[in-house]
Image (cartoon, rainbow, N blue to C red; front, side):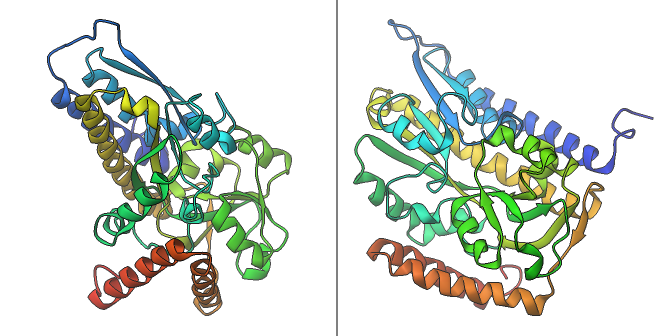
Length: 357
């Protein structure tokens, strides 16, 4: 019997995907590496902070930073910091803008970006069904142009790229089998989805990412509405939460990379291009890591009991999301353009049918 066969089903799933993805990152870094050319004044040093804690960051960003540092051949080095290590997550934007940080990986809502599209960052209710919906809408339905336009109006912050993360599920210590069961449950959650779900009595609570596990253990939190199955298992929340709601509020999280504009302008063009290439690699890594794990952990994961809200009752949530979209569209011309893009994309996918919807 091998070490892998001794592991539980969920541990085998996570272990197998770690091995595969680790190999792909090493190969990519080797392919990108160029002959060593060192700047006379020493390497450019950057500090990048992500929204995520270290266990999750090991997958959603560390492979990219490792690949970039290896391929940069000493010309540039990025120091990676996890959630709240240098500044509180809620102050990421300010720290990026004033140069405390050179780069950030987060979503607009979590980092409190002062742009009129910040509400769409993270989990926007029912904007997506699959992770591929995110790059499709950014590349082919105008979101790239809208995001760039919004950040071009902000001093000293450069938006670089957006990608997809996991779907949004709710994991709790007590079961949710109806909308009424949400009432009074205190959950760690992202801003926009938390605001939307609060109409059913769910109470969004903000604590530092690294404190979530303890808050669940002490009863400060009743659950999390922050992620999908892969993250819940990877970071240990599935060890404390007993139930997983299979109804998904949206299919993928919208996250972005940002740079301090002054820091970005000091980076030579070839290293800027390298950084963008490794961002694309990160988008691919995450899409594979999440997509490969969500269904298998939902089927084979043994740590949480699956619950669901009946379709006829969940239809109320879907209808409420349509009203929520329309409310957001009234906030300005640019939010309306985003909502219009969501609606057009959803219509095309629905008409296309299987396998798109």
